[in-house]
Length: 252
Image 1 (cartoon, rainbow, N blue to C red):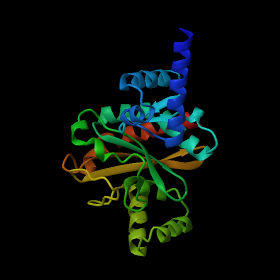
Image 2 (cartoon, rainbow, N blue to C red):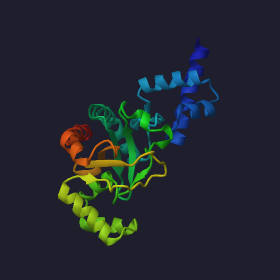
Image 3 (cartoon, one colour):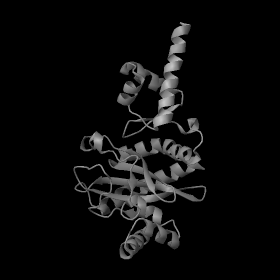
Image 4 (cartoon, rainbow, N blue to C red):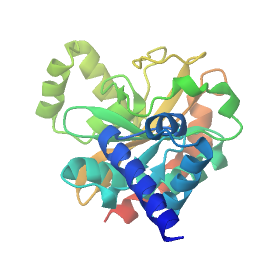
């Protein structure tokens, strides 16, 4: 019995070490790296989730160490905390609206897509190999990027435009439109991610703040053929605002 317990602890620690080394791993990858039966790895991961050691992504289903188990990189730990706090709200909003809900974090230079909740009604449309979690959204063309720009001083936006090789008229248009509308809206037909969806998307987004500073943004996105932007604004913008308020409360 004691030997079995020790072996279980050793296996759990091996999984924790691998997650610490690789940031995020799927069940198949952990099965391969540990050389343990898949059922054993799955059981260990469930235990680690129950004990608050591991978080499983909503859309990519990959496993990551939870924020309180990360040491050293305070920015990475904070980003994981944002995701873990927001995850239940993303799921709820996604199922309520029937739209995809994306969450991003801004580090002052780039905007990383941290989590994405896909509602059950759309899941078949999104192939597993088309996940955007871990990719970087365009600051000047994505809805999430434009929502963040509204929170930055003009000189900072100008600096980022230069860094991203964005033409002056393009940069001006993105900021002007977003300031006027009060939300970020994806540039129609634009797609910056290396993975390809089998359709174009529309998206709207609002900034997320915590303790007086910009954290990132949250977006609703959907297949372009599903609905015009105006319809989504009328039906769901209030819900997006409420969800962001709830998430911001958890980050105080």
